[in-house]
Image (cartoon, rainbow, N blue to C red; front, side):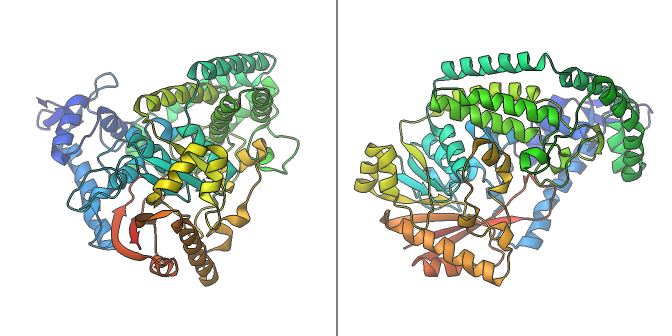
Length: 533
């Protein structure tokens, strides 16, 4: 529908949010939701010609924005090669679908999306996947299990699955996702802990302080960082964000310090020796320790593990860092600051209550959602080193029935994303959890750890490590196995890995990775290597 703007000669075709969603979905031939369009307005990507209650979007601006997005495909192919399989970008899936049900129980840096696993495990064929590799009732193995994505998707598809990981925390996370839970008992435990946390806070001033700080921030940000006008002016280079942001950051600091003084808030902890000492403000650390001690008293081990995952997710969101640096920590933040991500003055966190409440409810809902989809198959994640673990023996200690099935039927294949050489510190990303829960760190058993870098020696060690894991796992596989490994193989290591493991690469699927946690939005691709005997 055409609506007149302020000047009669400047008529534009304007859409409501719903109309914009429908038009864009048709134009791109994929689903674009109302919330997707709202995001564009909120972050100043497109202009709002209506008001906050009834936003209106110009068709030509919408088209221009999405034409630039479409152009990215061509640009990425120039950088990454013409063999890029854009279908495997899964661009048509919303963020909520890429993190559906239990996949978002806890953050994990370096995990692949469930749709990628599903693509290779399910029974469909298309112009790229010309045969079915796994069927219902098969057993699939993930020797580098990470956060358990393969196990969860295998369950959805009625496929048995085993995961192996050197990290005890990763194994706990994966098993909490796939195990059946007494939701009623978990709910009661959460309710009791939340009440105890509220009682603990009554004698503290940090909650009231944070409420007052939020009010002051809201007033200040409304005046100096109006949304979306401020972000639009930045995009149009009418405001120097770096200069203006620093100026307003300094302007707000006296308000912050006055409130600190008024409520007598102790910001820093007494020590700075450990991760928990360094990356959490004093009031937050007190609440973390309080809840942890209460969780330790829970007698049911399954409930205790699930509560530990909720607490871990909570404290990860409460680290004293800027919003822009949540994925890769730089320096602790102890005052209000200009936030480049949100385009306003933000603050560090002084209480875990908000996040504990949010993640408790979210966890219950996600577990319930997965229960509705769950198949009657077996999944388990084991603590161990894939280079030497006896899978059947380890499974027998936990689930003799499953061990018998593995012995009799053998494992149909592997779907896994091995660690990337010198890219991620897999233990350090959950350092707070190892420290708090007392898990033994096994950094020295990581294959391709960050601290070894990406030099020649590190690459050779990585090749030997992955090959050794595949050789060990082969003895549990069927003769006609299918192995799928997801990797960013910029050093061309996987042909050598396959050779050392006595396997051959029969196909490669190259996919663009569009939705990364990091701020880096440069062209990035993964290859899914298909290996056989």
